[in-house]
Amino acid sequence: MPGSARIEQALVAALDRAQRRPSPPKLSEALRYSVLPGGARVRPQLCLSVARACGDDRPELSDASAAALELIHCASLAHDDLPCFDDAATRRGKPSTHRAYGEEIAVLAGDSLIILAFEALAAAGRRAPDRAATLVLALAQATGMPGGICAGQGWESEAEVDLHAYHQAKTGALFVAATRMGAVAAGQDPEPWTELGARIGEAFQIADDLRDALLDEKTLGKPVGQDAIHDRPNAVALLGVDGAVAKLKAALGAAISSIPSCPGEAELCEIVRRQADRLTPAMPASQAV
Image (cartoon, rainbow, N blue to C red; front, side):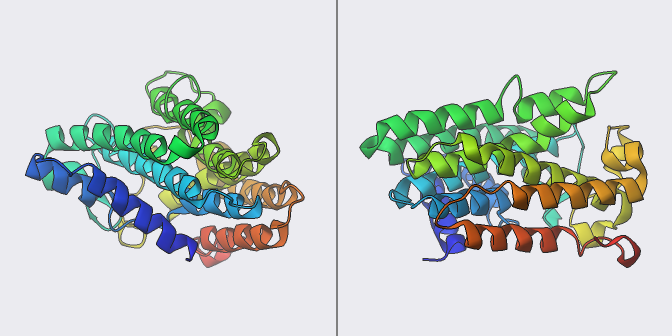
């Protein structure tokens, strides 16, 4: 089964699990609304790619890991769009969760998706509890404090921001989790895969900064100019457009170079190159990398 189909199937299964008992209709709808249909599913695709490169001997655990990563990501979007943070009206080309269902439901939807992510890992890990425990720890560290996406959001409330630490937490943490969890799900040492996740996360954040500065809302599917509006640290403000593009190129090149030697190395290199192509065409022609 193709990776994209595996991811969608695992996500639907997780959402179905949340509705096995009578549940509040509006909150149930908001969970599905926040997850389906999704974006590019970059993090779960990366997780599955690494799992396949490492042998993918327990696909049910790889699928659960991929779904858990995406559930955490979708939860972060529902929370990030709230009025207390970005107050974003749209996400993925449609009204943001709080605009569609109200602030209270959006908060609960994000909270529920976080719990659902860990439930998915626990349910799939019964036959491999040692791997499941490591996966839970990896996802928890990428989600909370001190270096997960909660920390990344927290940096935005500080008067002085460490841009590297901010980007590592806000974006890089889930990408590092994706590569490490893919290896763990397949029974392999996650350490050699850490740099790949970090480099792709760095590239993704720089590309996001460039999109926010250079694109329009219709093209991006969400409000633009948010870094400037909220006076947030970003690569474009720090390095300029040309400097940010150069750093993006360097990060993508380093990502490909960091892929460990493994049976699926060639396939994984091609996948990373495709992601590089996906990140770069969104730039204005004069800035394409």
